[in-house]
Image (tube, rainbow, N blue to C red; front, side):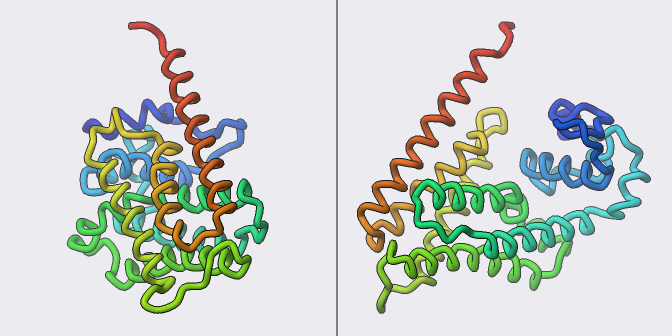
Length: 250
């Protein structure tokens, strides 16, 4: 139909039903993966069920067997993200090692970033009644709770100083939430072809968040975490430059 279908066909070859390890991928999982890619690239309002089916080279009936309409697909993505956030809070490492903490925190950001279309497209989703407003309240609460849990862990480990009025963990989490959402929105308004890749976008979020909590952070821990993030950023830049040099000449 339109540009979205053609684009996903390039990302995942039409009819591909195996992952990189050669394992079979169910049609339902393929629909979920392809819809995430399309929704993030073009916005949830610009992508139809028909375009997703064309991108995967499957019949609309095959797709609607799993998800009858876009609302069903959006609700499934909401549930998956909520479950991942809850699992992430349970599995978050207790280690005080800055390297372990950076990897865990960037993994948390990666989870939320993968489903950014749910936040960027919130107005469309709610205006078109694809999900109930209460579901969004729960999703935002889960997301903020993930950040709150990490702040409490760092405070208990004495890597963050306890906060006292007028400051509070809730204020800090709201600031983190604003940075996360603002960075994602800024990335979405530039053309898809020149948007930062996922690794760079995660670091563009993580570094400002580190500076938000800087006044409360143990100096040695702050310096170590900052060094880890800068190292990851250098690796991401080198990886991106390496991939560009491998592109065939036109």
